[in-house]
Length: 376
Image 1: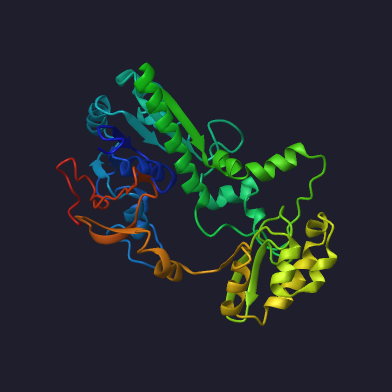
Image 2: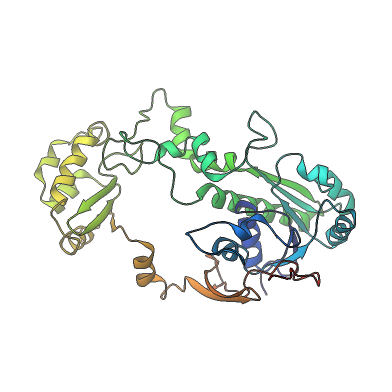
């Protein structure tokens, strides 16, 4: 039996953060029903992505909405609103990521839904929380990276702020929302209480940076400066960063400089024997390492470092990574629905030693209502 078998989730959310939360619930066995507009569906069905044709639901939509069904309803239409209210009577969880106030205007805010189902678990996801000067601004991953300080964390000191190359705040925020929903469900089963679970992109971005903000808030004068070269993290000492070799790139993590000096036969590093120098002099240290590695090869360097248990890794692109570990770790699965057959990633959780797989792809609009768009 799947852990969440028998749990019904109504999902009003769009794009990434909310659907990420409901994807995880679906992976764990919950019945997730997307409530979306007739004909057009939720906006991410037609999201431009990697130059691919999204006229019949693009890759992002299919990836994050596998194992779900769809209920077509126009929430501005009184008859459709009543049909959705009937669904709420049998639901355990409602998820929405409207801007603050929109769900209430549509008649599906927490207090309104609670009158229909007193023990409902109601989950809200916003861009910047229910209060504050940014509450009505668009909640979008890149914009939150900019406002939260997260974008400043990447890149060398001489570079402009660099965004993380995936929608990391959306994905992490969705995981947080799923955690809150699971905790509220546990309380419901133990004590019979419903509740309102809330989080936001900004709160997720802050939580992602708990270590860095912890240093800023608790130390008298932390050196919050990006390294000027080969930066991997603005608060970590050399050699932490990424270095170019003759035939590729290598990442180096935390390690004593003495061990690295011996491994690379780079005696110049031994002069930095003061523990503080690895941070204070990190640009000089990284420059020495970079010069030593520039003409080296991966085949010569990686085994030499790995045999001394030096924390290092070749920088791989997606295809190279998949070639090495996708099969042995069963990282992908084939899913199918009326939208077609595709390959997707899987739930990253193992339960009782078993990988959680599901072969159901993303739904056509309204596939649970007996209604479907004519052009699907």
